[in-house]
Image (tube, rainbow, N blue to C red; front, side):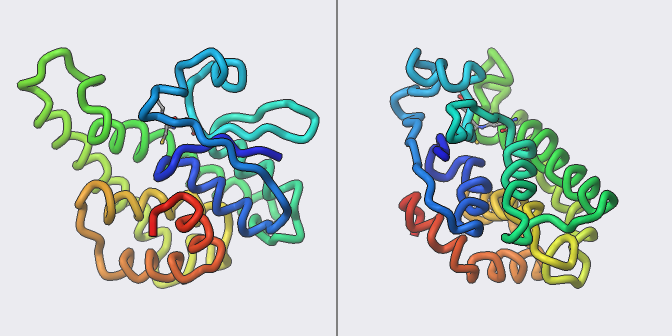
Length: 205
Ligand SMILES: N[C@@H](CCC(=O)N[C@@H](CS)C(=O)NCC(=O)O)C(=O)O
């Protein structure tokens, strides 16, 4: 199993899941600073030019964060990263889809890749502002799902591995203040050994 990743990218969610599972895996750095995601070598792995991508032992590649997360949880039931009932699975997929497709793609991407949203540099502050508002709205949608539980579903799951990067980016990349409940949630996740190993491996601590 090989994870194609970039440090501090959303691939960190899958990196955490692999650490939680605890089986041997390889990491392959896709160097965004060198635009490696657009080079033929990586296009042969993932023509979408995105991380995460997971190469399985038979050489086939799985892309899209929610699909990879679900696949890893289902193929490693001993890791207990996905409750074994249809309603919970649907809720986990609902959460991961919202985090990646809405909060990340529509919100954070406006903040981090601003120039791709407007041809007019003078408009960029407005694009960033719109992105920030989308992330803040996303956190307002997701926080009540957490409620006063330790983790989104009560028990720790792949949904929390996804929510980790959403909350971590707010705090460490986008300077978006966290509510006390979300700060406590982030601290809880940071205290997990698998998260600490991921951060160390990605050079983030
Ligand atoms: N929908 C994809 C999105 C992945 C994504 O946007 N990844 C970013 C890193 S956080 C990326 O690879 N960006 C490279 C680029 O757009 O050039 C997923 O869920 O996996």
